[in-house]
Image (tube, rainbow, N blue to C red; front, side):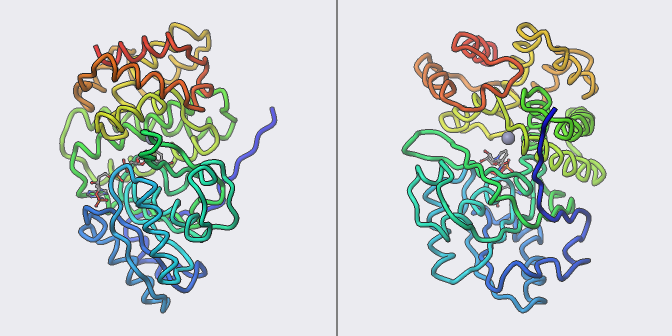
Length: 368
Ligand code: NAP
Ligand code: ZN
């Protein structure tokens, strides 16, 4: 089998990792634009302060762009890029969950390349600004992936920008930053991380290396999802395991991409405001059921086993506890979801590519 892998970033993982390494930002540039969420969590949890102190230690100036909303739009990325240019930033630091990190990646491209949406989505650009990413949720793995997922209001959906150029040069993972995450966001993001491991494990693009990452992530995250379903209190040991598992899930999808739950989940987020991870969680049982019935490959049942789930019913009960009920959708909304999902490029990544009718059945099962 021929395969390749490209994971070029430096990873720093552990409690107080920035304070213990105050030269951590050395060599990235001389003026930083820090990109954070509009809810102010980066400031409240101390991550912004730690980064500013590390910058001060290196005598590096900075500017802050704190306007990133959940599921960030292309317009927000353009606004951040304008600020980056105006203040002369020569590198970007994203602090947050997937939303600020994905916005930071797009800003790194757009600050250097004044290009159309089409050129951005097709990878038609030159050099991008160097990036550092501080993860504050344990879910997307965005701190190490080559993806930036933005909302494009003109397309009425989310689209993925994919390029090795936006893999952060530096990924910072301190479980302490996730300690105040409310239970529901912890669950939503953990389910997202699990879906990355699962979709990667069940991908036709899997490689011996991505499978190692996905296998380890399924095992770690499967155990943590069970703990989360039993208690609203999350220990620091679990926070650390979730952050590690999420990073491994990100490494797995960096090679394989995602598949059906992500493709069908985006319209749930765009039209029904369902958080990203929860949207995947709502769909995953019907997705696994589809694979179990349509693919002869034993990997689907193996994935459940590796994760420590007894069977699909066990998995379904767990997802219901973590994700709650699916939103109520009208017939015309369902048709729109299917229309948009049929255009997704990642459906072919699954062990078996679904037809339109298959997707309709997966959606109906999800919504029943
Ligand atoms: P998020 O949208 O980044 O954050 C969700 C909420 O959690 C926000 O209100 C945020 O507040 C808050 N928050 C973040 N960290 C916190 C902390 N430590 N303590 C308390 N509150 C905190 O959520 P996410 O699930 O991490 O990211 C979802 C996005 O990532 C979606 O757009 C999804 O499509 C994308 N995604 C990207 C990849 C990739 O590889 N690039 C993979 C999967 C998903 P603030 O407003 O203060 O930030
Ligand atoms: Zn995801």
